[in-house]
Amino acid sequence: MVLCALSLSAFAAEGPSKFKVSEFEFTRPAAWEWVDVSTSPMRKAQLKINNTENGENAAEVVFYYFGEGGAGGTQANVDRWFGQFQEPKDKIKSKVEEVTVGKRKITFVQAEGTYMSGMPGGGPPKAQPNSMLLGAILESAQGNVFVKMTGPVKLVKASQETFNQMTRSALK
Image 1 (cartoon, rainbow, N blue to C red):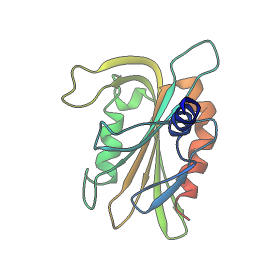
Image 2: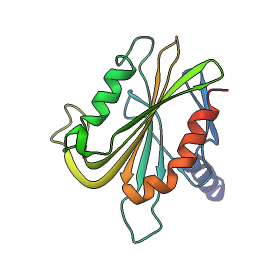
Image 3: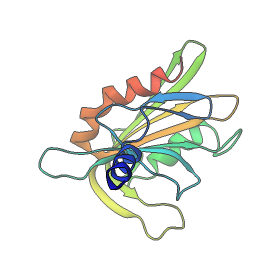
């Protein structure tokens, strides 16, 4: 009986290989860990990318969905993400790229600098120097889906192609 319970716990910790956020189905990269998000209604899914080099912090990938018209438009969210850095926009290597996949639009965002982590109303933000943000906004009439990866620059850059593939493939 104990073996069965341990086996179920291990499966639950592993998480699904595919998951939906609104109308989009994402495939979790095999090396990225599933993180339980039952404590936050804003977060619909979360993944963790462990850093195997020199014990640096892990990166996190968070999937947000607020419903139709929720959380503002694409530009408002791009500006909000850039505003989460301590440095001004012209110092964070900010980049925005709009891509069309089929009939769908996805906006990719990236920035580097001192990321100020934390939730609004959840205490003072914590400065995380040498950080990078990758974002993807998947547009939908049912409400946009926002995917945001943050973590150490080197780890996020190494994960960028996988992030782009994961978000693009959800638009099929």
